[in-house]
Length: 153
Image 1 (cartoon, one colour):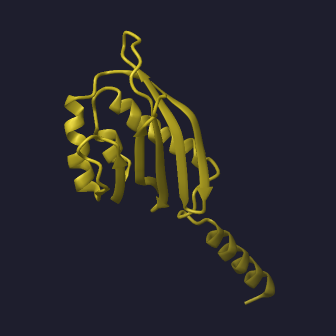
Image 2 (tube, one colour; image 1 turned 45 degrees about the vertical axis):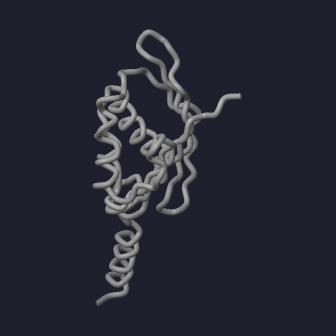
């Protein structure tokens, strides 16, 4: 094998090795906010499926809901937890305010405030939220969520 062939083969291996599909791209913050918005868009129409669809199988969740202040573990428990809310969530408009994504390798943390109002403009309680995402098998999945009501004076 000639030196040129060895050099070209080495370069090809370096290029192929550098194209790792397990690495998040530079638009991770936009992708994560878009995933969250897609779940919230469904939620605003009384559809709880959006959050289940973006979650990992081993998702954990904390929610400040009276009587249900335990950690939820796993996709089935999470599905069973959020599904009944579909009957209770009124259609509404929302704002995902001040979103911030912090990226740490294959893990991203999204924090934001959720402000909503009924279709006739009546404000609903505001919430603060944290969603943790993990990049695996070429896509972002939510691995943890934590929501709590914004306390007023």
